[in-house]
View (cartoon, rainbow, N blue to C red):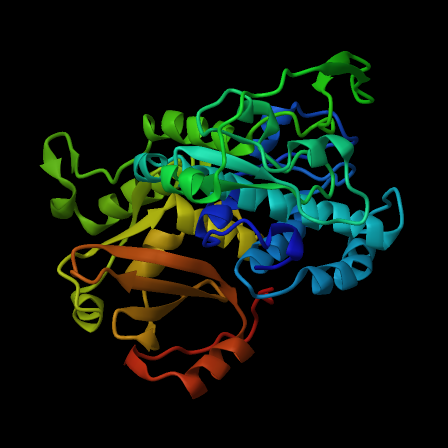
Length: 401
């Protein structure tokens, strides 16, 4: 795990990563502009007023959740990151960086843990949750008072008190089984009454009531909000178009099918929920990845991952994907017999697409897509096996980040 703040969360990071990636960038001038519940669906850093800066923060947090970097390294690189964007912020660099990174990492883990603990199987096995306060330099009296308290997992108290419950809060919950109650002699408590205190929102001037012991902005359950949003999103999820006017898509002329695919990609960009068809693979590529289908799909998860790691890719470039797939010039190996890299050009720009076929060969997915420069192509050509075609590198090209 990336930091001691979340070392007691006890879950695989995939849920935390999913929570982070489903968020939409929201620029905000000051803290308080977003309501607590909105933070479960929005990625924001008070004062950060550019998507490019927010994307760099997101990229760092994503890498920390995947174990590709550490909190210490993120904090160390903070001054250079803010200098690159000319961002002026409040507080010292170390304090500001810790607030940004720790808060987002611990909240993502907490939301992921909530999602895992509320599955029917988990609730059957662990019907109770125990609040845990972990050692820290400046403990909060209320959080210490809650330490060890056991409540039913569905107790309404957790709607506002599921940790973290403040800036740099180290608290977590741990699942408790009926067997645990007997083994340790524990008993289930009644939730303490929720007392509130007035807080003046600096962004709106509005007086809000915040539970005692909870910092403003933390008086909600991000995991619960996320799950409700996921339920609502599932009802409007996009699916690949399979026929047009009663005619199967696979029977459409190539140009018409590409146009339809570009439209589906546009729909996914505007409403990133579900899966769409993004391209048509040639029989030769199908054979290489051992796929029964010529349909290349783009899922919301892979789109969001690509937007995080290749934020420079513009909307108009995404809509080129169907044409680039159809015009693939070179295919290189990608470390697995079902994963390959496709290279194609548009004008004088080269694009790289990483695709895979599922284990049963029924579906194919686009994993990543971005512009690439000639030097990088040559490096791939030196280190990867060429499975199909060749690529003439243009003289003029845009540098890919």
